Image 1 (cartoon, one colour):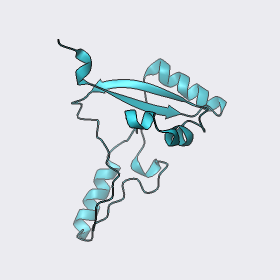
Image 2 (cartoon, rainbow, N blue to C red; image 1 turned 45 degrees about the horizontal axis):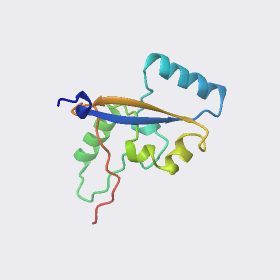
Image 3 (cartoon, rainbow, N blue to C red; image 1 turned 30 degrees about the vertical axis):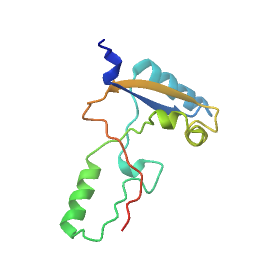
Image 4 (cartoon, one colour; image 1 turned 90 degrees about the vertical axis):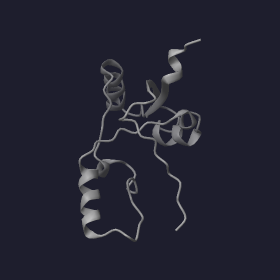
Length: 121
């Protein structure tokens, strides 16, 4: 049996509905299918994209900074995030927001899974 959904990945975008502007943004997202993307410096987590390595030299630091500055990011949650009450609290206006579910191809080169675990030094 060939199921076309086996090559799909479900992603979730939490949205606040606390203000009229929030509602307008959600409406626009639903109507257009366009998600807002930001540079890493404009994300809400100041630790996002922080590297920890004592072996960087000046050239490495300049290259990493340039690479970071040339990308836009749109963060989504996976199924575990969708089921996590903390994410609903943080990103969906204290459980008073909404979540948008989208499906993408699993082998999409633009989708990168983030690993937030801390490796031992």
